[in-house]
Image (cartoon, rainbow, N blue to C red; front, side, top):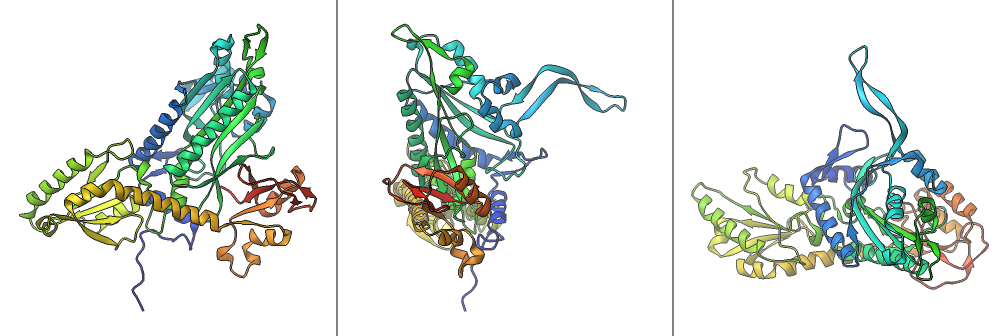
Amino acid sequence: MGKKQKNAISPTRAEDYPEWYQQVVKASDLAEKSQVRGCMVIKPWGYALWENISRTLDDMFKATGVKNAYFPLFIPLSFLEKEAEHVEGFAKECAVVTHHKLEQGPDKKLVPAGPLAEPLIVRPTSETIIGDSFSNWVKSYRDLPVLINQWANVVRWEMRTRIFLRTTEFLWQEGHTVHATKEEAIERTMMMLDIYKKFAEEFLAMPVFTGKKSPAERFPGAVDTTCIEAMMQDRKALQAGTSHFLGQHFAKASDIRFQSAEETEEYAWTTSWGVSTRLIGGLIMNHGDDDGIILPPKIASAHVVLLPIIRTPEDRQKVMDFTEKLANELTDTYYHHRKLTVEIDDRDIGGARGWDWIKKGIPVRVEIGSRDIDNNSVFVGRRDKGHRDKESIARDEFVNKITHILDEIQNHLFERALSRKNSNTVEINDSKQFHDFFTPENMEKPEIHGGFSMSHWCGSETCEAKIKEDLKVTIRCIPFEGEPEKGKCICCGKDSNQRVLFAKAY
C-alpha cells in the first residue's frame, strides 16, 4: 500500500468544504478577520492580488472611454428615499450615522452627542449620490455620454459573513454612465458585461455563464440586471459581476435631464455595473486544492519564487549571487504587459519554506542549490502540478521559457475549470429528477449531486419562490447562450419558452 499523500490544508475539500475555504484563506496569508464584526483585514499577499485585478480592469474600462472619479462615502437618507424600489432593496443592509461627535458621559465613557439634522447612510451603493452630481453635470445632449467609474469601499450590514465572499465592508468598483438614448444605455450595459466575462475567463481562468436576472433577483430599481455566474468546486454558483440597465428610473429620481438636439427636454438613460473583492473568494473556490490556493499567473501576487538552498556557510555567496542575478534577469521580462514579479526566500526553516509558497499559490517555485549551479540549471515546480512533480531545467532555457510556462499554467487552470463546469451542467426536464439533483440524501452517490441545471421555467414568481423555499435553489440567470425552445416548467408543468440556469449559490 502506497504512502498517503500529504496535504497542507485540513480539512480537505471533500471532508468539509466551507471550513477548507476558511483554512485556505488563513494558510495562504490573504486576509484575516478584524476586531470589527464582519470586516476583514486584507494582508499584503491578498491586496497585491486585488491590485492586479483592479489595474487590469481599470485598463479595460478606460479603453472604452470610462474615466475615474470619487464620490462621498455618506449618502443623505432622503437620497435613498427618492427611488422606492431601491431603498426597499437596501434598507435592511444600511449602516446609519445619526450623530456627528462623541463626548464623555458621567462615567467617563464616550457617548454619541450632536444629533444630525438628517441621518447619513454609509455607502451601500452609489446610484443616488452619483445621480445628484450627474444632474448638475448634464444639461445638454452635448454633455453625453457621461462614463464614470469609482474604486471605493462599501458597507452592507450582512448577518452571516465569510471573508471575501460576503463581508460587512468590502472593496469594489462601481461604474455609472448616462446616455441620451435607451439603445446607447443598453449597449453600454452589455459592453461592460462582456468586459467582465473576458476578464473572468482570460485573467481569472474562471469560465462563466452570462445572462439576465429574473425580476425577483435583479438589482433594486433596475429595469434589467445582467450577470456572470461561475461554478465553484462544490458545484455552487457565485455571482461574479453584474451590469445593470437602469432605464430612466434613477434619472427621474435624481432629475438628470438634458436638452436634446431637437430642443426638447428629456430624461437621461443610465447604467451601473460592478465587481468586488468577492472575485478573490471565487478564485480560491475555483482553483484551490488541498494544499492551498492556486493563483492564475496573469493576476498572481507574484509569478516566481526563488528558493536558494544553502547547505554550508561556504555555499552562501555562490548560491546568493546566482539567485540574485537570475532574479534580475527575470524581472526584466514582461508577461502580458506586466513585468515579472519575483520573490527571493532565503529563510532557514527547512521544508516549511516550500510549503509556505505552495499554500500561497505562487505559480512557479525554483530551487537553487550548489549542485544546480555547477550544472547551470534550476529545479522547477509548478503550482498546477503535484508538489513532488519538479524538473531540472537549464538556467537559460528556464529564462527563455518562463512566459511559456506561465501561459501553460494559466490555460491549464481554465481548461480544468471549464471541464468541471461543463460536466456538472445538465438539462433536467423531470421534476423528481430536479428535486433529487439538489437533495443529496435522496441519491445513491451524494458526493456527485448538484451543479447547474438548465431547466424550463414558466416565468411565474410563484414557481421561482417555491423552488427557492423547497430546495434553496435560485434562478441564477436567463442565459444568453442557447436558442428559445418549448417545454414544461420544472415546477408547475405549464408551458415554457426557455430554459433558465438553476443552482444553489453563495
